[in-house]
Length: 230
Image 1 (cartoon, rainbow, N blue to C red):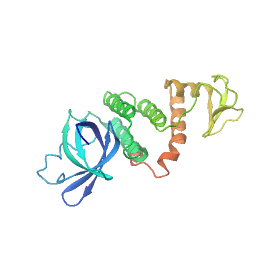
Image 2 (image 1 turned 90 degrees about the vertical axis):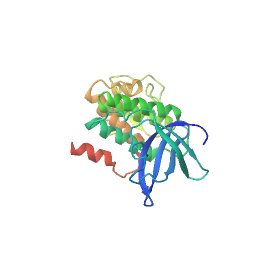
Image 3 (image 1 turned 30 degrees about the vertical axis):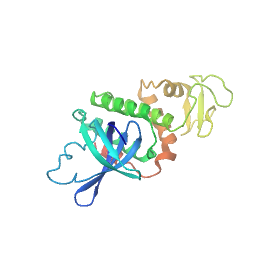
Image 4 (image 1 turned 60 degrees about the horizontal axis):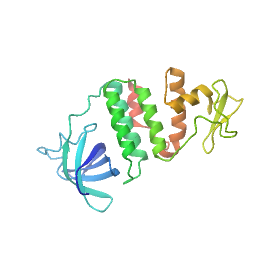
């Protein structure tokens, strides 16, 4: 890959006694795995650079699944994330690591990821940031839902009515209330990305878990385990 590319680290793992395999989220290329030669050596200058939530610029080369990291520089210090904000940022990384298809260009999602980290660093309520990002991620994965019209009739969503969410169809008006039902107010809140109270936040979390399940599978998130500990 020619030229410098903006990137963030999603995940690292050991490779041989002295190197690392690094999964990057690259602005122009999506998820890329690179070999960082010598990164595990005690005197390696890469140790202080290859850290999560540090804005990077990188150069890499290679044609296979694993590229070779040629150069990397930190554009700034790591974003100041602590406590719940830090665990939330780890969740974003874990989520992207699971669902992104290698070498699929998603520059819009990259900007939303950066914006979400900045919001978390500013102590914007984590649940709001996560739900908004999950909805953007679904859109970028091609998962489009109409939050403003009943899928069966085309009528506008009415705040006082109940709607069943069906994965292949969308929101359909219903008299039933169960784990797949939402009020019209909650559906519209999803559409406008406005989670002004705990009820709409809980509904948003329920919806994104349902919608993301086919992409993330059943394996528990390590970051959620950290949430439970605090």
